[in-house]
Each structure stands twice: as C-alpha cells, then as structure tokens.
Image 1 (cartoon, rainbow, N blue to C red):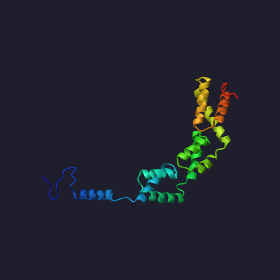
Image 2: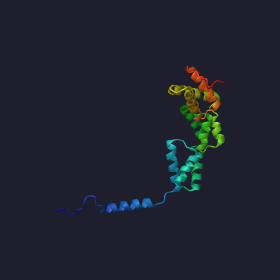
Image 3: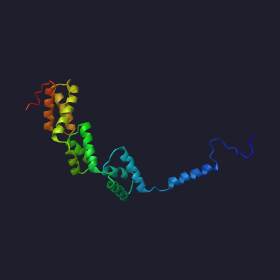
Image 4: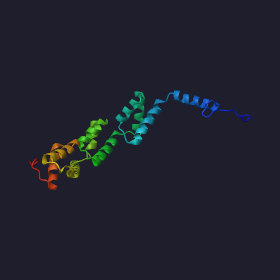
Length: 196
C-alpha cells in the first residue's frame, strides 16, 4: 500500500515535472545557433593547445567546420595581432625541432614548411639558420648510427641504403656520397664505389 501524499512511479519513469523542464532546456540549447566567432575561437585554441599551427593550417581546419570566410579572416587576424598565430616563429621552431630530432636537411625543411602553408621566403629564412657545417655534421651522425644495421649487405647495398636515407631527409647528392664514403671508411669498411 502506498503511503499517503506520495505518488507511485516506476523506476526509470520520466514523468516527473523536473524531467520535462530538463528535456526542454536541452532541446533549446541544441536548437540555439552557435556564434560562429566563438566557435572559430574555440577550434583555434583547441588546436593551438596541442602544438603551434600556421595560419593556413588553422584556415583549413575552420573551413572543414564550415565557418564563414569573413569570420575566419577576423579571428585569425586577431590571433595574428596577439602573436598566437605567427608563421615566422612557427617556421623557426619547426626547423630547430626537425633538424635536431629527425635530422632533416635544409631542402627538406623548406619543402615541409611550404606544405604547411608557410611562404617560400619565410621558410627559406628559417632553414638558413642551419648552416652547411651543422647540416654535414648531422648527416654524419645519421650515417654513423645507421652503419651497424647495413653491414650485413654487400657494398652496393650498404651505399644505396645509406645514401638513400640521406636523400629522403633532403641532403644533396654530393654531400650524401661524400659523407657515406668517409663514414664507411672510418668504420673500417673499404668502399670502391664512392672513389673520386
């Protein structure tokens, strides 16, 4: 028998007065159009929290979310004024990181930056911070690290793998051949393929 003053409801029933008002509020929130400027800011900040981005990368992300072009320009101009979006600073950071940790050469760094939307002049200026001496020393370190894994092959295979590895990282052919020859000889591996 139910107690006086209490209605009996089955568990999981949504017939209470509070449930109707909650559903109504949720529906209203879903139907209310979002301010595209706020939406664009949120998207940019979320992306910039993960890592720095170029202006072009942010433009592409906002277009995928169907943000209007005028809003994209307004938000990104403001973020540029605040230095939250700075392609030159991005390029410098990218060059330093990719050269140090991945061993990328200047040519490859410029190509990567161009693919990310950095203009050619800015990309070249950032890559110029890696001088020829630093580039060669990084190439030598890459080859020295790779030599033990190529010693099982014949001379042709060793040279091809080492030069190919440097080429994929953007090192010029002449530098790649010279570094591979020198480092193989330093490791006690005679090579006739690379003789001048």
